[in-house]
Length: 490
Image 1 (cartoon, rainbow, N blue to C red):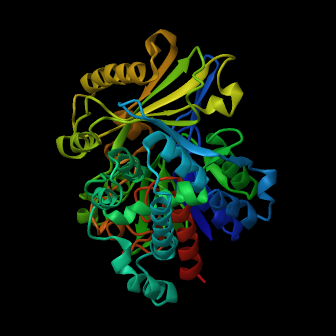
Image 2: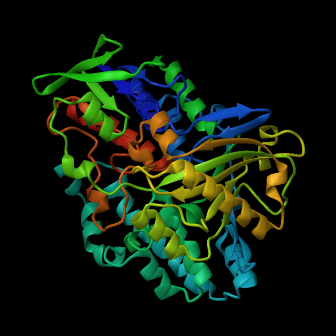
Image 3: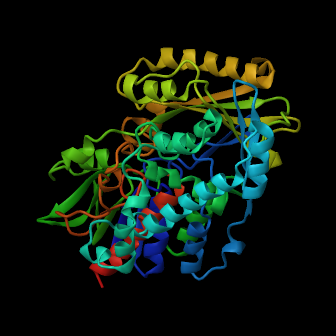
């Protein structure tokens, strides 16, 4: 069949590979002049930066794409597993590294926090694995909206396990009931930010997220995060996928209740199937104005956004690694500012990603490329220029305080990405990084499904639809779309 995909984000690219490998004629239309969406890169004055996602887990989801194409993944995409996931810094001077090896991590916590209950930590991580292994086959790897998907042993097992999944209390409530050390509670609460949520509101079910980092592992692509985009993009081209850049889709055309093509630059491109990798808000409001939009879904609370400073630093910091977190002192107040007051906390938690630690040519010799990010609210009309200026001062002061340095004196390159530019560059509604937030127990059921109930031949993938945002979930959304097409047109 002839399939047109709107957008070349990571989900759109993965969908193009899967559908082309199934024998379909696939074309991808991208408004920007580059593939990848948020997963892009840029270079300035000898520094290379991965512009968006910086944490890589579940590499098998990328490898699957090459296997589908009949290729050896190692010939096209190389990565290494990290010994440590992240370095953590607290205002009281506490520092520790989160190691992949659980015994090593327990020893690290004992040395840094005086936390000697290794068995309790292991039980927590085992519970995270249990929750993930029960829920992933039901809620992550398949459509929630097909009846046959619920008539299975996996679904029955999941239903019987509901009391153990943690649907009622919050992440923070559960973590406080398990760990007496506030620093450790804050550490595990942080995993809510992996899908832009609030640990004081999100269900404790999301305490399964540490499973991916601790039990499965974190990785680094040999040539940086953008290599994920590039490798899938090259594979898609080898499979015959046609890419059209600087081509913004204007409308999804329908005849009756079935899709028939798209309009781009006033030109009509016929298709049997259309897959939208665009955010569902512009998809309905701009591309499908003649179709009744699911207003309740569109009005759901949105995830947080990000403020990122890309800094070229003309010195090395040996105490930092690839991933680093400088925690705020009052975590609950920070999330209250994010989700209730819709502003930036005056002492934000800072994430610093430095790919030159592993890829030396990402920065000039003796220098480092810093990706400095804080969580911020999505764009709802705030005075961002004022907020960004104040946040920058807070970030600089905190880095100087916790690292005993004068960071301002060694910044020689600076670029900024913030909610307004995230929205304009990636069409993410309100600059929300993960579409809808997951701040209530029904969030898994409140994402837009991967197909249209009203328009035959219309499908959806990407971070704003099921199963959610982030690289692994976006790759799974592409997998679900390919499965649905196979089932619907078998």
